[in-house]
Length: 226
Image (cartoon, rainbow, N blue to C red; front, side, top):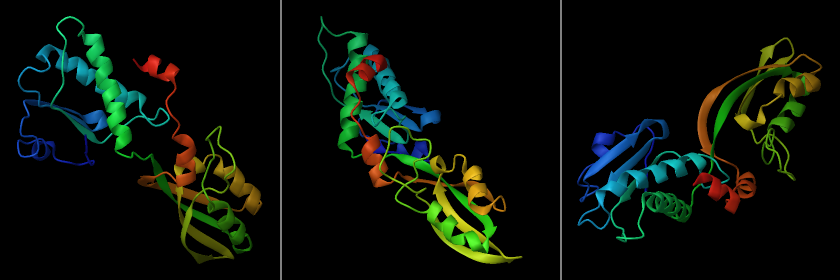
């Protein structure tokens, strides 16, 4: 298993230099997932390879960490075994899903989240309130079942006077933390504040939030994913 950064040129990535025994590869655009078949010597009959790939794809969809989907990975299958009596398509499909899960855990995965840039305009008298609300340990708006943390997890990048006793505050905030922000801003500024936002980038979820989200997948979830 290898990371596959967005924008990677697949023709340059999926080569014999990187995968010496590669027989074929499939690229799945929607999840930025590359599948490489490097099985040699018939240790796994070719008719089972498509179902192994399907098992991997289903694992991408149902995820490993708290059920979140997975993307941006490449997987090479280069060894395995089969039994002339007990092997079946269902068994290999399940094996593909479970192997992906175990290897993915060993890769120390992290949750990513979208971050937006916000420009908040507020009366100067309320700048302190806005700063306090935007910053903090982590933004938990919209995440049920999490407790003990406060603040939106934003980073204030700067501020400047824009005239008329108003200040413009430039900040980056996890998108999960801006739900209903218009109501909060109106309450803090007596209806005089406004804001705009635009997508900025993805980044790793804050440590304490990720710690609570990275729960083991239950047996019931595993059965439902098979």
